[in-house]
Image (cartoon, rainbow, N blue to C red; front, top):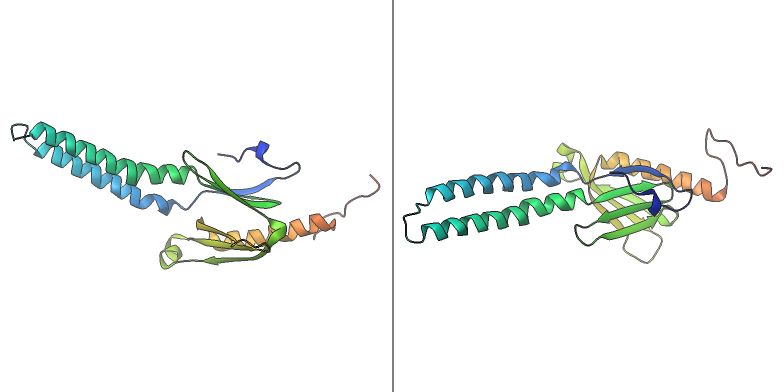
Length: 181
């Protein structure tokens, strides 16, 4: 889903958008499969002639639905509603299912961009992008970023292009701004 243009500043363009890495869905998928299998097994194993058999079936069904909602559907919805947007002027992080939470960092305030890749991230190609700002806040940590090393390199390119735009100088292969127009 594309980031809404109405939320961008005039002249601002989206360079690339990302979702968290797909590995965030691995555990919820396992939970979903195991819960459905276990719930079905218990549901049909409980004999309705047992004392409270019908009640026990409803309890099994309720517990199964609760587990699926909390540990499968909720993480999936969190993944779907989280987006990382990189524009030519800022980094935008938005997340939230019912209530939205967002954080923006202007590229002009970025001092350092680093990354961390865990052992599993080396295999699945994801990591954490850490962006430090010149402000007093703690910076921006974006977890589960796919191709984090490439993204770090692209963010540095965006920072350089933003600096050249603010100074009014041309970058390599670009024409200088025309002041006579």
